[in-house]
Length: 366
Ligand code: NAD
Ligand code: GLY
Image 1: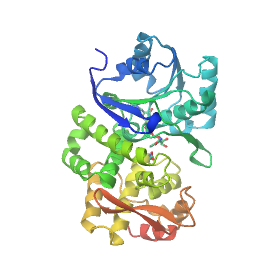
Image 2: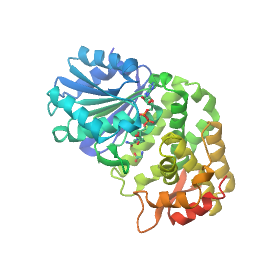
Image 3: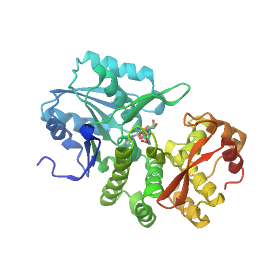
C-alpha cells in the first residue's frame, strides 16, 4: 500500500512554501505516489549522476512511470568539479529538449552536488518549476536537501552562484546509505555531530552512546538520527530562511572548515572532514576564551575522533595562510568574522573575531 513504509513525516514550516520531509527504510519507490499528490502535470525530469544512476535511478523511474509520469533522466558526471555553470547548461539543454513545462517537476537523486545543481536548475528554469529532493548521502539527508540553498560553484569560489529555492518535498530513504562509501558516511557524521553540538545535547549523547550501531548502519537508528537532524534543520530554517541571523548557527565549524578546504584545494578533505577540523578548532578556541569548559571541548573532540574524523589543522596551513583564507571567506563583515563559538553542548553564541586571532590560535591547537 502506498505510504506504508514512510515512518516519519516532518514539516518545514514556511507558510505557503511549507513542505514535508518523508523518512523511512526502503521508501524510494514511494516517490511516484507522493509526486502524484502534488498534482503537478504528467512529465518529470530526474537529475542524477553516473554513480547513483545504476544504483537507484531504475527504482525511481519505475515508480514515476507507474504513477503516470513521462520521465526524462539527466545524468551528470560524479564529483564536486561538475557542480558548475557548464553542467548546469547541460541540464537546461536536456530540459528544453524534453519540452518540460512550468508545472513539470525536477527531481534530484543523489548527494549534495546533484541536489544543489538540480535545485538551482529548478529555481531558474522557466522562472521556477516544482522541485523534489531524493537525497542519497548522509550529508544530503541531514543537511543539503533541507532548507532551500541551491547553487553551483564559480572558479573563484564555492557556491558563489545560487538561489534560495525550497523543494516541494524531501524523501529520505536511509537504505540508500548502504551503498555509500564509508568515508562519505563518516563525513556525514560530522554534520550529525554538529547538530548535537549546536542545539541538541540529547542527540550528541545518542551519537556518543550508539556510534558503533550508527556506523554499522542500524536502520532504525538511522531513521531516528536523520529525523532528529532534519527536525533541527527544519526549525532553524523556519526561523530564518535566508540566513539573516540565526541560521548562521549551522555554520559552526565552517569558518575554519571552509578555509581548510580551500587551502588544501578541495582535494585532501571531504567537506564533512574539513568541518570536523573546524568544529574541533571552534571548541578548543571557545575553551581557550573561557566561553566553555575545557572538558566540553574535549568531549566534542573525543567524539569526532571516535567517529574517525580529523581534528587537527595541517601544520603547513596554520597561522598566516589560515588567517588569510578566513579573511577572504564571503561571510566576513567589517574585517571581522562572525564566529560560532561554543558555550556548552547544545548551546552556542556568535562572536566577532579577527581572522588574525584565528591564525594565531591555529598555531597551538592540537
Ligand atoms: P556528493 O554529492 O559529491 O556525494 C558524495 C559521493 O557519494 C559522490 O561520489 C556520489 O556520487 C556518491 N553517492 C551518492 N549517493 C550514493 C549512494 N547512495 N551510494 C553510493 N554512492 C553514492 O557529496 P555530498 O557530501 O552529498 O554533498 C556535498 C555537496 O553538498 C557540496 O557541493 C556542498 O556544497 C553541498 N552542500 C549543500 C548544502 C545546502 O544546504 N544546500 C549543505 C551541505 C552541503
Ligand atoms: N548547510 C547550511 C545551511 O543550510 O544553512
